[in-house]
Each structure stands twice: as structure tokens, then as C-alpha cells.
Length: 411
Image (cartoon, rainbow, N blue to C red; front, top):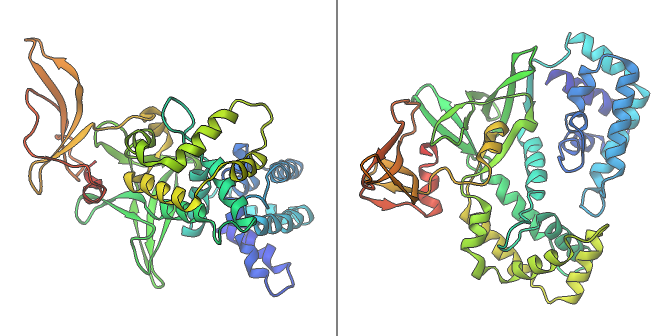
């Protein structure tokens, strides 16, 4: 995003102290999804360039200030980000015409290409994962925002030496897979943020339809000297069917849990003793009006014997049981909290079957029990559609995380 780069450079050039380069991290501060409440502040710089009138640009900045002031930066360990934002907002207020000059220089109402670097994606996805509470139903709950408070307060008060919850979130982002199409091999491949040693992973959004504001998404894998780009593909939730990822912005790229977290919580409930303490406590305060999560976290830490090291181990079990990948939000919302396949059967090293439905008894017109399934491949082959068979395939059911990761491009 050339316009954004020039704007940030202009901002940095107005600073006159030794640590001014650190202020480039204002881009990461703007990528924190849980801070911003409106579409225009979630995509602030994009809207700043797209807003033609000077007074409307200033109103947009005021909207950013409103969101910023409502967020507890210190309590969430983001005090430095707040400092960067304060300086950036002051710069914009005093130099709003620079935005228009840059906009006219590139002759844009929207950028033809939006580049989201690995560090920005890390910040954005970590922020999203922190907010993915599972607080419904009769299962054990996973109130992630509340757990974040527990670890933040525990570290602040010297109960623990480092924020283990933040480390856990980092490990989740490390393992987010991005699927893409390789024309060279004619197959779907994937990469995650920790997999490519010495290389960086970025997402590049290239304009497809200016009127509709649609972008095609590409995966950029780069080293110090060069980079390669591949079209990103999204699962659709219809078996293992995938299609090119096309979105209106980064906010329409979701994190998909191949195995629903709710199922993991049910499967491991007997092993999650510390999380159960947190869950039981949170269920008791969840419906209270005007509850202050910080005070609630302090109360839990003082009233209940909670082992934060063991809780961290339990969070790692939850992480290990799930696999994450990027998915277009339009499909993720339809997929809801269900699994695409109830089981996956390995018949040989090259033959896998995904069983769509085996729990519910389905019968054909002759009253024979049948099963709905799909032969899985890592190619874009429309011939591998759904089949109805009277018997399940003979083979080994794949359940282990390591085995599932090996065939992630088949599912």
C-alpha cells in the first residue's frame, strides 16, 4: 500500500527523537480488532484516503479518538501502542492536507493493492483470537477475554514472571494455515507463519472490481532478495471444495477452526480442571450488569486457588487439538460451529474419504442404510463430488493432529 507507506514515512519524519522508528508500529496499533467498534475505524487508513472531504476526514479522526479513549490500553499491556496512536493522531490533525496530497499523487479513492505484512497480520489475528470467547451451552466455557485479564493482572502483581496467555496466543497465530493454489504442481498447498524459516508471509489484496470494492487475495512468501505470490484459496464448507478468496477487505478474512472449539471443550472436559474453575466462576458473573472484568479477575485470583501454570497447560491441550486456517467470512458464517466431515478415513497413502454424515441414519429408496461421503484430493477436481454409499470405506480413521496437518490440503 504505497499511499499508506508514504503517510507513515511523513509521520516519522516529523519526529525528532532517537526512538522515532518505533512509532512505525502505529500500523500494528491500528490493526487491533478489539479496539475499534466501527467498520471505518477498523480500516482507518483505507477510509481516510477514500473520504474525499477534509471535514469528513477530521470526523473520521474523531471517531478513531473515541474508540481509542474507550479502550484500556494499560490493562491490556498495550501502553506503547496508545503512545504511538496519540502522536499519529496529533500529526493527522495538524497535517490533514498531507493525506489529500498523497491521495492525489497516487490518484486513488482506494488502493489497487493492499499489503498486510506478517507483523500486522500477527497483531490483527492475535487480537481476534483473544476475543473468541466460547460462553454458551452446558459445556465448560472458554472466556478468553476474561482469561486474558487473569494473566495480565497476575503478571502485574508479580504472581507470574511472564504473560503465558500472550505466549499461547502467539502459538495460535504461528499455526494459522493459509491455503493457496500452485500452478506449477496444479495442487492446493498451504503455509503458516512459523513454517517458512527465514521467510515472511504476507497477504496481498489486489483490486478486482472497483465499483463493488472487491479484492482478490494473494499469499506472498518472501525472503530478503525476492518473493513469490500465489492466489489464496478459501474453504467453502461444502466438503473439501475451495475457491479463490475474494473479499472487500482484511476484515472479511476469518480464522476457521477445522475442529470446532466447542467439540474440543467437550472432548477434553475431564482434563481441564483449572479451566473449569474459571468457567464456573465466569458463569456466575456473566449475566450481572455493569460487571468490571478487571475487578472480577482480581477477585477470582484472591478468592480461588487457581494454578495459572496448569491453566496454561490446559490451554495448550486445547490448542493442540485444533487446526486453524484462513477462510472467507461469507463461508465461515454459514459453516457456523459445525464440522465439515464427521470423520476422515485413510484407505492408502493416496486415498482418503471424508464422511459427511454417519451418525444420523440415512436410508435410500429401498430402505438400505447409506452414508454420504467425498473422496478427498488436493487438486481442484470437480469430479470428486459427494457420493452415497451403502458401506463405509475400509481403512484407518484419522484423528491425530499431526496426521490431519499432513492432509490439510485435502480437507
